Length: 104
Length: 209
Image (cartoon, rainbow over all chains, first blue to last red; front, side, top):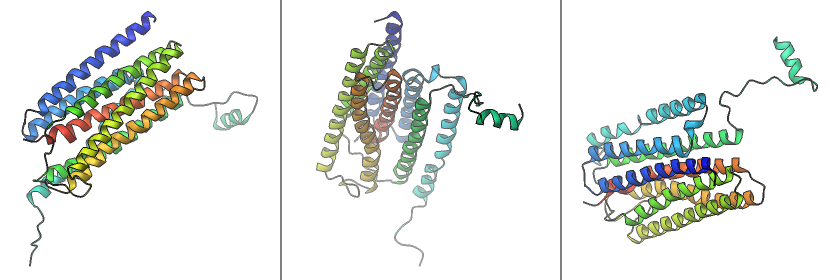
């Protein structure tokens, strides 16, 4: 195995260990019976960090040309953000729940 | 160069063709995989948006999971296959054909074990009475959401494992090159990342109290 190969694998092992630790903490938090909002914020935070680690270092997006990096990141952030408009309507449904007894 | 001369240069068999330089400088197969991953992210995000809608608007959403030990084992397995895949890729890029083949096979086998554990998990849920449109605990939408979102992962990892085994065998046979292993690596890292989002959304946020 060459020195460059060993260096590359070292980087991957570090990212792998970080992902294992983050996931273990995620499971620990899952067992804490936290309320909805607090749990979602924590899970999304862990998910965000894991995404950055996987996409940048394991999928090697960090080594791609800057223009492709920008295309991927901004396009995906825009699409994923706008897609979140859909589910916020569920609050309306939760408050103004449709019932079987409609207006007479 | 005018439009007429460009057109002439492009059509003449004796002169080099004039093309716009690729803005991304990325091989076409790799770009195709990145675009596939981007479209797949959108599919998964749509599933999550629908799930979040159902989950948030349903007061009696079930919380059926008492223990997620098997899910933790599955997650650890998938993370480990990410590393074995990368070791295989490094070996392929260094020209170590035997090493690359061995690690790709380990990754594919890991994926198949994951798929088997996943099917076992489904069988347990079915044995507890969870179907697509009914379950013993609460809203009927739970089953549909559970099977569709986890099914996304099962389908991708199952198909990916078989593809890995095929690519590994063809790589050893000389038909595929290290670039093809790199493309499979992109896919494999993505399906693992998708699983890392599915676990908290489906299992950890539905733990029994």
